[in-house]
Amino acid sequence: MGLPKNVLGSELEVCCSSPMTGFFRDGYCRTGMEDVGLHLVCAIMTDDFLKFSKAVGNDLSTAIPEYQFPGLEAGDQWCLCVTRWKEALEAGCAPQVRLLATHMSSIEFVSLEDLKAHAIDAMD
Image: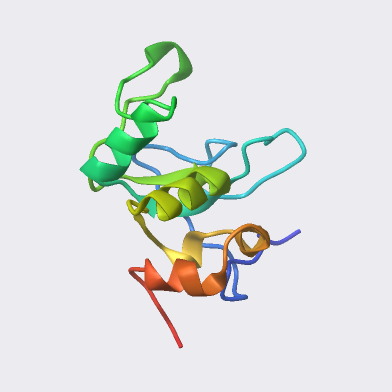
């Protein structure tokens, strides 16, 4: 079985392997029944977003070695929960996204137009 599709309709690309991301820690922003957080958006971390996420209860900048989580820095790419990205959008601090590595299911929660407005790989 092939990879799922991204929001542009082509095969989902790897988001990041250093640090290894994705709910399944395989580098892809893909999901399954176990992924209640829906880690669908390939986002590029910013200081503003990391501060926002910490303030709303999800500290992504602090390492958690027992979960093999290195802690994120500005510039890191990470499979972000789509609802957190939407919250950040509404708060005015949504990080940029890689559309080619963002799962097609994202557009069930946020508009493709909003994703494209924050894309580093926007395509017509």
